[in-house]
Image (tube, helix red, strand yellow):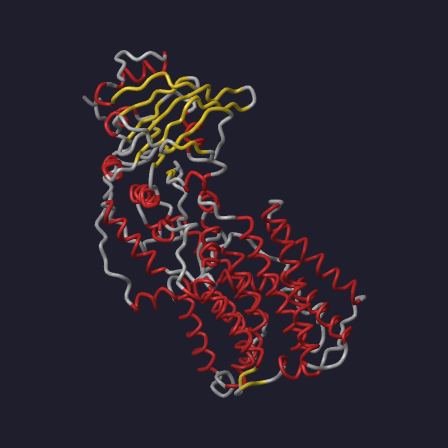
Length: 254
Length: 349
């Protein structure tokens, strides 16, 4: 990645009272790249993701998106520059169908007077959801209510929703927690297809073998600082554990 | 070289991402959607009851006069139930509807008496004041539930007492019977093409409520807030504002119901609506709207309100003690909630 990174966070500081969650963390992700964010509990992974997704604000440091400095006042500001987040709890409404969930908060209204009365354009939302599902290789009927879906399908629906709206990056917190082997594979394949379409993907996971399998590059956080990064192809689980615990990588990659 | 790939998570042989390519729902499917689940079963119950009572008393039950009588008896409850369906779909409850109904009726009567005379303008003043009074109570309920985060059960129990108490205070406990004659003769007991105007107004309210719930963003957010408030907050839906609007809607419909009650009985009926809230909630819940929020609908509510009304009428026509109705409705209510609970347990597996 020689050109400007898509998201570039520099010297991010965040403290809660006396607790230093982040003490000058640097992090970047480029277009069409999957970056893993690993670290022990309390290393600041979740805080960093919350800051990048606009749900929390840094006390110091700067975030650049496409080379432009941004200041997120809330998640809607991050979404406005094309950053979507898939939360661990998925944040889907189980009683609504997949299309309604994909368009939740961004509903399409009918044209003209009916639209001004707040009438939904359900057929257009179902159609666009169906097209996105096909594009992403997800086989979920747009009219299927979320509670009827399996765990893997729900996860896929949440990723597909993010992919549909993310014009720059998707942030994912433990995207395959609680999934079976086959379902996990389906979700990982989906994440690769999202990356191949040119979207930047950031993944937090405690599952180190999986991080090595899916990501292109891994950033290690320790005590609120980024202590190194490594190409996924040049590392093994022991390297990551050592870096998370001691802050020293055996084989340092650029 | 990537690390050793270990099995992640459990080893259950799930089908994973199944191919579920299906054609778009047919018209038949859409029709079925309207009557899906519990409301389909309820519709059958309603028809069976009607056939049963008609077979036993063909000379009395299936007569137009009796049907109109049942429709009139159900109408004010249905107006209240439309509002309560929205509230219960958000996972809330509104116990104050009968208090607000009586309060709004008193305000409507007092405002019309204050203006004086008997013309359409006066009737309109009464309507606006009655509905406005209901809206204020509803707004207060919504604010206390959504903003102050006090449980809806407690908030609306409190405002029920307050609204009833204020109505009694304003009237010194004596019903106001100074109601414009034209209101009683048109809205209260008038007919259009043989159908009571009260029933026509109720039908209009019900149809608008159904359309808003099924086809608008307001309806979609009502289901979404009841299904997962957290999912709504994550996508920047203002959950607090939506809840306040929903309780205001319920309050406004209680106000309208108060105005209709005033027209029907030509008096404020201070003590005539003591159990309306419980009857309405029972109807909505029997109709399949979940007390946990997120699922249900208007068609079920309509049938859920009509079944108890028909049972009461049927028992009276058959000469049975009408007290049986309360017993039957109570049992059906418990059964309906148990059924909903089972459904939720099944789907969370």
